[in-house]
Length: 423
Image (cartoon, rainbow, N blue to C red; front, side, top):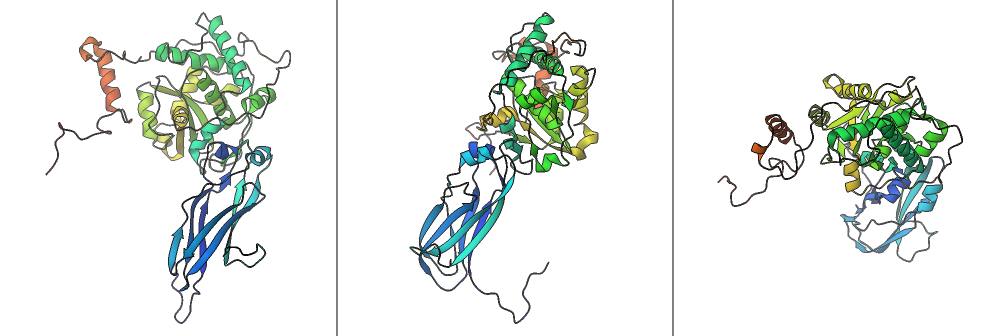
């Protein structure tokens, strides 16, 4: 659209406040130090220099401490960027919110020392949405922060892992939740036992809000899922990710159009970025059997589908025919390395009512399955490829070829004395 003013018209030169805020704010943002103000500048379009001015920031409701910036001189026809954007937020208010509400951030530019009731030289009001602690903002709002809603320290997760150990014990497996210590097959067995233990919770499916993956939804914590017996696809995926992480495995969250499900690395690895928006990166790792994806809503079926079937369904949702529906995946391990911490639990441990626990031996549980044929990592000291079995050498070559992390020398090239440079 042509925004050129008509001939003969004039646009009044003025003082302006140019500010960019995040659209949504909740406790997870506060705990992970997400900046509220992304950019802040004063623009003086006039021919007058304004000296000794003060910019004041306030909010309604008062979820932040008022902030003042003193500017000695705002030159004519200039833009004055403000670099120090640290603000003190009221974490207690954000923790107490139970419903979303609209907040207003007000910025007023006044002559320094002027009374607050005096007219401002210029003023700007910006609205944002304050979310309750249990509401996720969606992948349109900082998608990597979904990792904060994976809560491995919730007491209900410990109870679920206790049942997981019982499933392993009853099938003559080592009940230790030892992560990757036993290799890829052991990691698959741990995930399968967790699937069986979760089936014992007899959960039922709850329909998520429309377009939840973009706009977000309220999240049930593991304790709430345990007590209510209900969960959306997103709730269930978060529950599995929390339990897998607490068991020492590296989980994934995958979002497609209107849906979410989980995955787990079978090797002690992670992607090089928290958010993976290239579905081919997932497909390559699936083909190398380095990770599995599984459809978490199948846990609500009666009788419960086997874990191997859930993994087959998970893989189907990222194959070539589903490109249009894929949104992104979030690597929880990489998010933790980026210091995205789990949201602090607001709930005390809830005692399980007598008779509500389902024994892992109940007929509703899927049969425990042996792990399929999976490649294990080569020993760390096996640098000499000639010492490896021919099949293992081929697999090692394939993994190096498809490695998209910074371990791949082609992606992490560093010049040196042995490097050839063009002239």
